[in-house]
Amino acid sequence: MTIVFLATVALVIGLGSAVQVGLVASLGRERGPVEAAWINVLGTFSGMALVFGIQSLRGNPPNLPSPFDNPLVFVAIALASVFALATSMRGLEVYLGIAGAFGFMYLVGAGYLAPRLGVALFASAVTAGTLIGSVVLDHYGFLGTDVHRVNVLRIFGLMFLVLGVVLVRGNR
Image 1 (cartoon, one colour):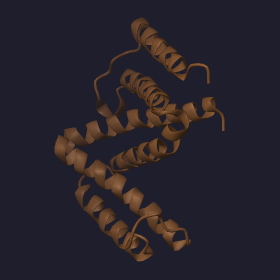
Image 2 (cartoon, one colour; image 1 turned 180 degrees about the vertical axis):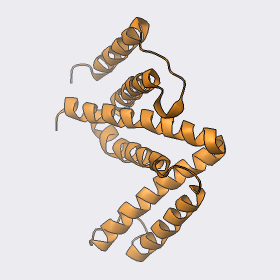
Image 3 (cartoon, helix red, strand yellow; image 1 turned 90 degrees about the vertical axis):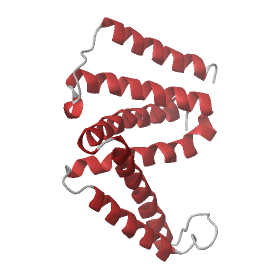
Image 4 (tube, rainbow, N blue to C red; image 1 turned 135 degrees about the vertical axis):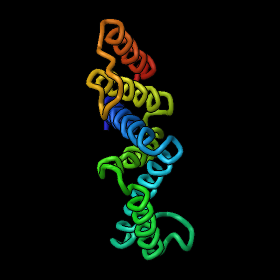
């Protein structure tokens, strides 16, 4: 795969990070910042456990030491974490529970993309995606946040940020 394609995937992960921030902000308004972090982490953990459980059941267990090579361990962890997430989400809009899925995508993306792109290019592309997504979400007041309209200065800022990603990429 080409460097440009992989960097674009990192940028898309950054867009997801912007959505995650909006979701966690909404959770924070409803429950408080620590509780929002708890729900977010439970979502991330549930996603990881579900993926490992499915991989294990399909005969492709994770490369982890015992007992984490046993599919039943991950099924049990997945069930417990999904139950904890569902319990913690009582009284909240269901879609807010997906906040942690974006964290899961970031972690998997970092594990796959950073070794291929380098840490600097991965981080700069994710940061550019996060800021681009954040400016768009702010413009529309995503999930009840304050509206901050796009203006010329913000557009210049985004252009310079993308230029920074290109410069970090260098001659590759």
